[in-house]
Length: 343
Picture 1: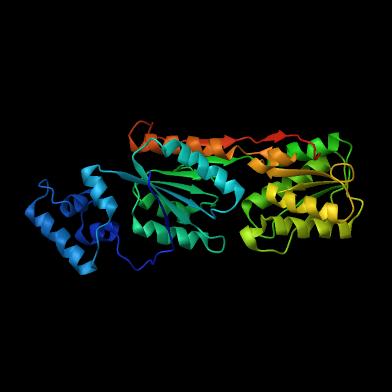
Picture 2: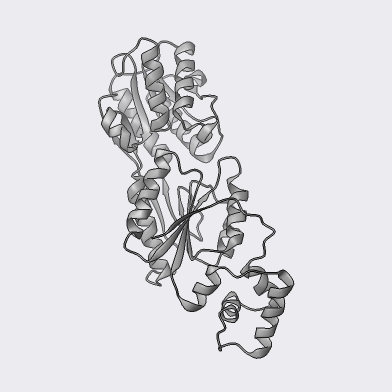
């Protein structure tokens, strides 16, 4: 398995789809012409060649693989490669591709402009299948993905025409908050991200609804964010800053749920620096259950990213091989709480 990282390409580069549109033929016909197939009439062949020349199109590996069924390429698009969450996901993908003669492309969607980065990446067309993780998909992005003409599997979001694996974010938070309530805590804080999004909104809503359902106070001051922008606020630094803010706002908070394990690790350090101990003074629960959490004793909501990476890759491979039902597949993954010494 070969691996390449693709940077943000320019949208101005013509694609095989542009050639097909200009020539008025199917993409598969363009591929046959580019690969000198005899299964095309002379008139059609000339139309395609004229379109290629007019657009100054440079054929890529996708056109070749469509006609010749040579080594194929899968692409994975994620907001970043450096967070433990996405690392676990990519490990699951790679574990399924180890024994397969297939290339792997990595697309860094970038936290700041993921939609435009993805569209630019799609313009390259250099893939036979695509996994998209951590990007909310609306009608516009969904339409761009459908235009790819290749199997697409979403991870962490849902759009009915496409295959998807997504998490019940509210349920995961509810498990964590109920656990803290069962431990006798009533003043429970939450660390979230400064970036407004579907995931952060769902988790905060689950936190507030669970507190209210238990008859406990719900205070805006108990929901804290850090100021560090790295990884959209899902970082140790942001967790450290948010925990410091919580302790200043209400020193009486006795338990905290963080929206990610890395935030919780930063929060843990802030608790220690304040002369307090986990869990004696402040109980702490993270989210994601990354590998390091198992070694430091951090309670966490497990999303089983490695397994989902494997399952999503399996589905994509079945789609490529024509071994899957035509209807789209959608699975909601219910997280589970792993209780350790921190709570």
